[in-house]
Image (tube, rainbow, N blue to C red; front, side):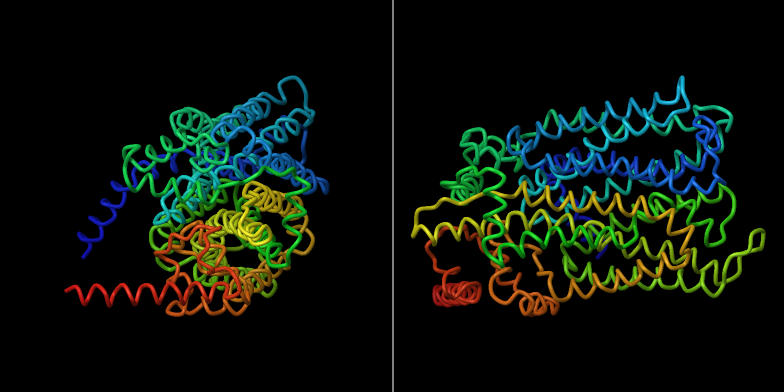
Length: 569
């Protein structure tokens, strides 16, 4: 059985190898953000860093200052994500990634060289804002770029790979901090400069690799560069330009984009707000990113040494080592989740199971701190040991659920919204298609939300740990329960559904349909799995009957086909 599964995985890698290579290269964009996320919390605890800038970790202002140093990156990320819809649509996904990467590298250099002749934090703040702009732009473009290139059979896994690289960057930075803390003197500024310098490594790998990848075929079609689109599609599929499957897929993309006219930002926003259902699809991606941040994951990512200390694990090296193990668990479970959950268990159940597990872990940590407060110098008891284990349990459940899945669903939802607007315009103009593409706007809004609340979490966490202590974990636990309820009632199952057909899952009664998807055998995704429907076709599936009419027609067609086939035999 194991040999058969291994052979199947290898065959899958060989079949889609071009898409996987493109995904791996683009996902270095996730790693560079993860590296910064993981390094900054450890750097703040280093006495060498504190000495370089004249900081006192025992000062009442240190928690607020730590929040400022961490969160200023997210401020830059917010504006980078905001600009992504214009830059990626104007210059292309590939060029936008190259530009963003260069900006990130410049910001990293500024951060690494700060504090040479002054104890002022100004240069560090400037470098983190510039680097953050690049990170924010990358984070919004990468899911779109991968989603528009990947085959539908592996699309969720590929988009989720960005999260795998993100947590890999976090893990590597944790161990860099631990190794540097053990091997470099705390009296040397090199102790904190080396981690800042090494965060440029994934940026350099992204720049070196993305140059040799193709542009998004869908973006090229939108710009009416059809021959380039055919070449790009053939390249990422590993087939010739004249291959029948390549030609068929290109025709479907062209049909989906046929007659599209670019709209100004204000017009795009008005189009999104003209209909409640369309607005829901837009807000869906935003809400997913909102909930992702309120899992509390970035509190642990940024301040894990401090959190481990708060639940009884003393010593800088011990905290950094425990943080490194946390990173290993995160990478391992994210990888396993992408292989075994995203396309097998599905998006919806990954979120539900993940949310429940996260809630249990956070509630236990919070309650344990309330009834069993840590005593400095005292040995760890059983309750405190299990609280430390719960930190690892939290990341297990997060890493296959609310970690990668919001990125997958947001990218898919962006296509859903574009197709829905396409259909709406077709119906209003009675066949004259004037659809509007807002994919980049949706991803920009989603990532702006992520970075906004990432900023809020980064700023508030050290203050909450100092002021409300165990209440911090109880708050995150309550949020995890709320997002689980949201996943049950409002999240449709999209696994194996073609990009151009996903919008059908948002037709009809949203809560009723999403709740139905909770039971796998009733999931609507099964009815759309093998469809290749393109918005704008005159099949009537999205007319008065909506989704239900289309599914019934699909079933009737499949039944008629099976009868014909059996008669032929």
